[in-house]
Amino acid sequence: MRRVAVWLEGPQEFDELAFMFFLLSTNTVQTSLLFCFPNSPDNLRYQDARTALKNGEDICENHYDVHIFITAEQIGSNLFWKTHKNLAQITSSTWNRSFSPPSLFEYLVHSVICASTFILAGDMDTHDKDTTGCQFDYTQTKSHDRIDIALGFICADHRQQISKQIGASYLADIELLASFRWLGNIEESGSIASRLRAYFGQDLRRDSGYRKRFLERIQSNVDTLWFDFIKEIFKGVILIITTYALIVFGMKDSKSPPTNAETAKPAAASRSGPSGTPDTSSLPAGRSHPPTRPGA
Ligand SMILES: [Zn+2]
Image (tube, rainbow, N blue to C red; front, side, top):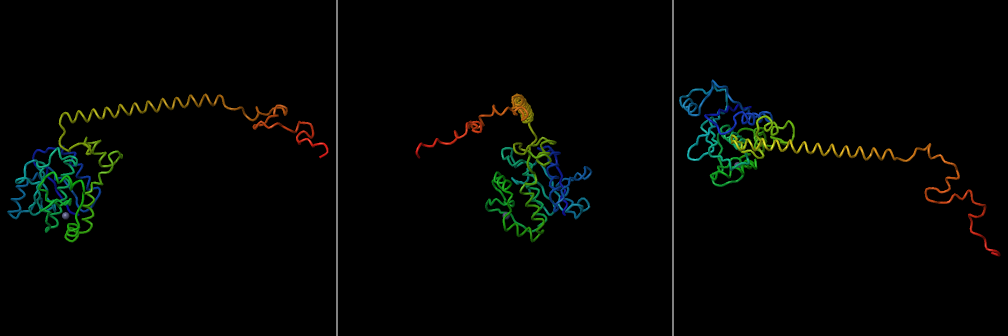
C-alpha cells in the first residue's frame, strides 16, 4: 500500500470537505493507494517541497510515497498537472464548468490517479501524439479529457507497463478507480454517490463540482421542494385508492351469497338445477323415454 498525501494549496474553486469525502471514499474500495490529507501544521506548498528535494531534505520524514498539491493556479502554459520526482501539482484552472459532466471531482481524482501512477512507475510515457481514450493520454485539446474520464479505459500497452513496474493488483485497483463504479447508484441508500448528495449537496449527475453559485443553490433547494411536493401528492393518491378499494369491497362483502345453512331448501324448490335441467325424479314413470311407436 502506498501513501498518497494531498494538500489543497491556496483558495479552491470547490467545496473542500465534499472533495475530501469524495477522494477518501476511494480508500474504502481498494488497498493499493491510501489517500490522506496531512494535518494543518504540515501545510506544505509545492515550491517548498521542490526546494526541499533540491536540498536533499526529507519531505514529511518520508512518511508518504507520493505528494500531491491541488491548486486553482495555472500550471505551465496550459497543463492539467505535472510531476517532479515524487511530487505532483494538479490544477483546476484548465478544467471548465462547461466540461461537466464529468464533474470537477471526477477530473481531479482522474488526475490524482494518473500522477500517482506516473510517479510510482518511474518510467512511463503518455500518448502525446493522439487521443486514444486511455487514461494516460496527453490531451492537447482540454475537452478531450472528458472522453478519457468517461471511458475509464487503460490501453494494453499501459496495462502491461503498470503491471510490470508496479504490480498486477495495483493495476486492478486503478482500473476500478478509473471506472468510477465505486460511486454506486445515487438512488441507493448507503452508496457513496447518495451520501455525497445527502451530506455534502453534490449530485454528480448534474452538479459541476465547482462551488455552487447563488442561483445553483436556489435551484437545488427548489428541486428538493418539488420532490417533496410530488412525494406528498403520490401518498395522497395511494390513500384515496386504498380508501376507495376498502369501501367498494366492503359493500360487496355485505351483498355476498348466503351461507350453506341458508341454501338448505325443500326438495320441491330444487327442481331446477344450476343448468336449468328438470329434475326427472319427480316425473311420471316412462316420461323420460321417447314414446314407443305402436307396432314397432
Ligand atoms: Zn495508454
